[in-house]
Image (tube, rainbow, N blue to C red):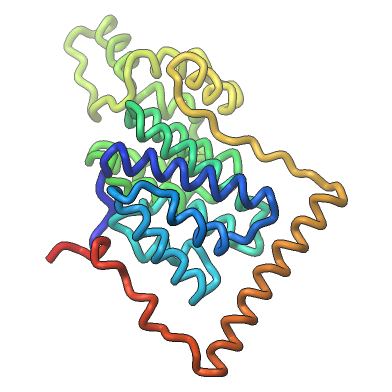
Length: 283
């Protein structure tokens, strides 16, 4: 199976627009499927995203899940994007779909600019931590991102064993250029056993944030280095929120009933769910 590649800037610009549009229209109580059907015509036709959206709609009709469509286009959508949507669709999760699309929107917008590996890592890691999405699966999804190189993938492997046991600030500081500089001041012959993957600035900020809440480190990196800010979901427990939740569940149930009725009548053509040619793997 092929994996995602780093896309052209225009793809990420259109992705950010797609995710923002879906999020805004979900807030207007529109169904995800209806939004995707309509937004298809708004997307730039010179990108591959319109074809990807067509496939998402077909997969949504077939399974009722957006994440399944993301997962079946691994050469276009990253494993982390799939992971975020899957967590939002999990019935046991309190991670709402609008927040998931806002996470994806901000990540795509960051990628469309001048992203750095530390910046993308911090954003994705904070998303997992703040929303309690699960470190093991989340880090596995991050490691599959083609934006990261072999040194970063090795870091993710080590992080799975250390997260929760070692202060996050130390995990950043000890793999930074600043840590190496300080060690060389004490021992000019010092050579780090592992290559630094964070810069001097990240190292200084991480050292200054040791023994403090990791959220303070995330916030400082955002202020000082322009890292993207992770959406902060605040649980509301009012009647309007409960009504919105019920209505969303009813729309989902209605969609699944229509699909079941179509299957009973034999009117569902599963061949329409094939992958668009432009999104198939290169031979």
